[in-house]
Amino acid sequence: MRFMSRLMLVAITVMLFFIAPASAVTWEMAGPLPASNFLTQNIDEFVKNVARLSEGKFKINLHVSGELIKPQETKQAVRTGQIP
Image (cartoon, rainbow, N blue to C red; front, side, top):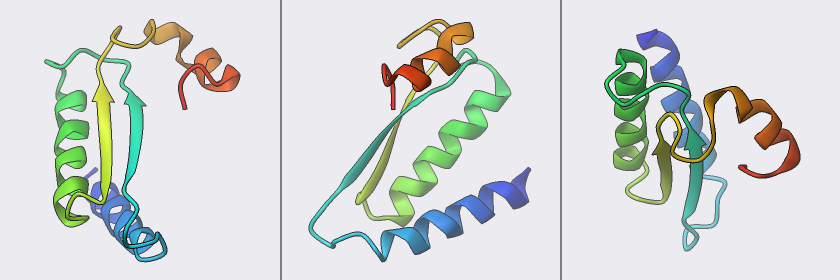
């Protein structure tokens, strides 16, 4: 799991070099689990690392279970563009 997190961090960091320096990117992320769940806590740590390593140029807003949509409706919401 740590390997995948680090690999994703490296990939995002490399991707940031291809984004115009003046532009900032923000993603909305819907997590299917509550904030107290250890998987959500790991995702939150990943989000913080991305923001730190990108020096604020790439931000992920993590929304935990039920904040945007019901967890079972996530796939349909992405498909229809309700959430990116």
